[in-house]
Every structure is written in structure tokens, then in C-alpha cells.
Amino acid sequence: MWKAAAWFPVMVFAIDHGFSFGPVEGRSMQPTFNPDASQMKRDIVFLNKWAAADHEFERGEVVTLMHVSFVAEVESPTDPKCMITKRVIALQGDTVKPLRSDKTVKVPEGHCWIEGDEGFHSIDSNTFGTVPVALIKAKVTRILWPPERFGPVAKKPLSDRVKIGFIQPGVNDVWG
Image (tube, helix red, strand yellow):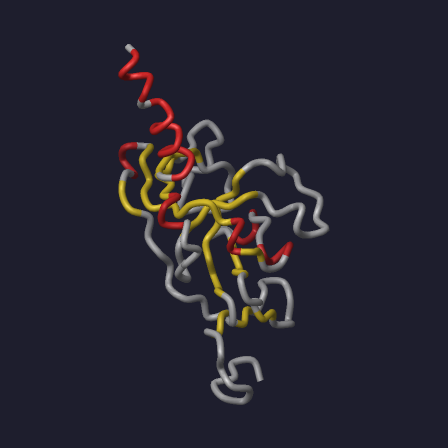
């Protein structure tokens, strides 16, 4: 009994800082997660916290992060302590054309632009702007449940609304 209890702190550390799993709530990541729109069935995903610890992300990866309602002046419909699941669309130095604006946004150092796969049902960077990469807590690497959807989470290709950073003005200027 005492030998098993000695491993309890190790298990807590591994779950807190290593690997865990969690549900994906809502419709913002359809069709990647919760494709049948049923609130009764939620996808359960594998969260790799070790992979997010170095704060190095790639465009197209799915991540979880602390809810960012306190970063922007947007009233949150959810608990600000909850985690949200979104896709990294752009990284520091990139320029993004938001979904509902003609203006472009340059992603500042130490930040990223995140979006849900279903833009009409997502509160994301199109609403609150860029987010600090330090808020990202895990990379979502696999769908664990339901069993028929078990497998890796695919990265999406670069959006045509993103220009990769450090492009000189007037060179490869997509928006004029």
C-alpha cells in the first residue's frame, strides 16, 4: 500500500505537466472535433503538455489554451478558468487578414493567431486578436474517443489569409 502511495506525486506531476486527456466542448472545431453536432457526444482528445512546454508551435497545429477573455475586452460566454481548443493559424511575424475585416494584423513577438475550424461558431483571434503563446498549455495530438474516430489530429495547410513573416513591403504583397 505504501509503495503505491509513494508513486502518487509522480502520477500527479505527469498528469499536470506531461500528458492527459480531455473533452472538446462545442462546435467551434467542427468538423475536426464533434462532427455530428450532438452535445451529447463529445470527442475526447490526448493532450501533450510536454510538446507545448518549449512554446514552439507550427501553423496548422491544434492546441489548448487558457481562456483569453481576460486578455481582450470581450465578455466571455464561458468560465474564464476553462481551457479552449483552437488551431494555430499564424505565428509571430506573420500577417493575417481576419475573417470579418479588411485590415491586416501583424502577429507580435511571443504571440500567435488562433481560430476554430468552424469560423461561424468560434470565438477566437478574429474576436479578441492575437494571444500570448505562454497561454498555450498543450498540443492536441490524437482523438481518443469515440473509438471510430481514434487517430492522429491532422494539421491543416497554411491559410491563404496568412503571409509568413519577415516579407519585405511590396514583395509578394497579397493585399496590395
